[in-house]
Length: 128
Image 1: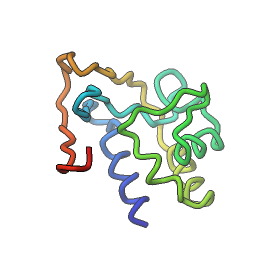
Image 2: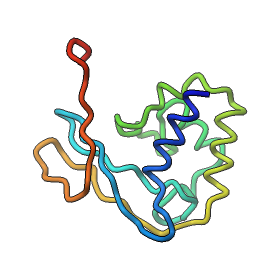
Image 3: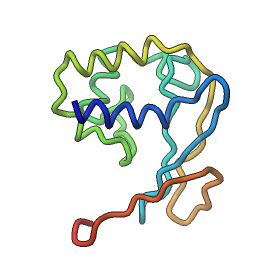
Image 4: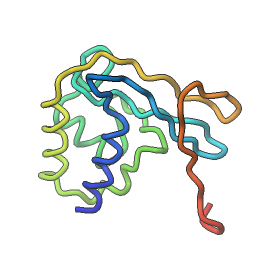
């Protein structure tokens, strides 16, 4: 259940609301700033072209339908242990959202000045 709560927290930052669309970046030291993608089923800027199984695969393995690996900020390793049923419930939820056309910015390299509000990820000493 904790993993699902973590995922929902990520979704809350990544899904733009209908009232106001605002990108928020996650700054990973040495890697750059990553902005959560549009997870609504918009065909142009979101997950609209992804199948339910492709979303489940991305959640559990970190691999996109085009075979690229998700950005490091996506905690897919924490979700790898979800049951297929739980991952499927998340995919069904994402598919049920109203599509919102919103192309997110980034990613930005470690030397780029990201033009979005961002949270800096701080690793505990000795765990880098």
